[in-house]
Length: 277
Image (cartoon, rainbow, N blue to C red; front, side, top):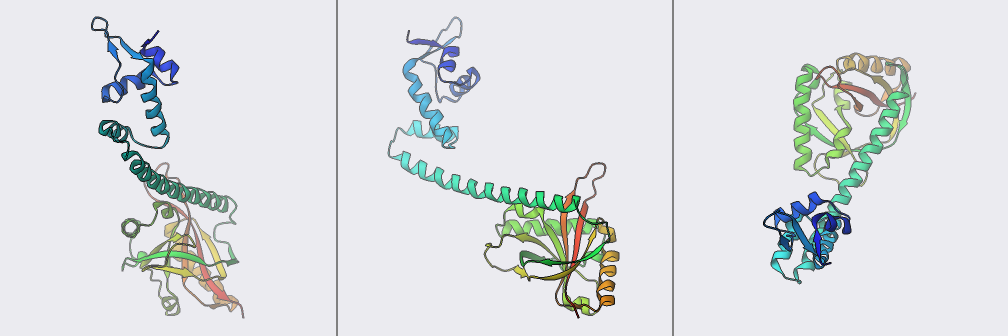
């Protein structure tokens, strides 16, 4: 009655034969008896207690390596320490999942914006709330170089985000800036790229707030048309007698799927804060 085949042991414990064989290979749970002639593994019902502990610790998120280390130490006082360490890891994962959820919700909203956006090149006024960004100055004017240079600048932005411990989920929403001073001089110069961060993200070097304003906006679906569309937007602002009161923002609303080429495809929202006469 006490000698259980590997199949019966797996059945009783709602696991698989493959799992038990793997635990045997690791030395985590070895069968009580192996028939030398047939190679069949047999377990004792008492070994279910050890298997229960393995399953419980796996539910807590612990690795098989850590579980085996704890079994090998035979030190019950190490359990609270290991549980505390696991609690820290779970909290880190929880925060990562929160960032993933925010990124997914943002992507859903942005793709809905793309699907419902007005005709490419349409100009509109839109009130946009304050937004917080992490900005990086590449010292290279994006508009004087090809798309490949922009890709290298984005790599630099990603590296800076990693150095400053920004979640990579933020990288789904990026943009570039032309400062107001350059606009007023008639210079189409942008060396700064940014990514949006959460409102509660701590202020640090590189983090700034794009103020809440009324913005003149135009949508653009090509990196190569941005300058043309931006000039169209600025001409519209001048024709209407609006006053530019802040920086020009090029926000990449969505990254469009790359199906047939390796070239990045972007749907962008060009924005200039204005006041009406």
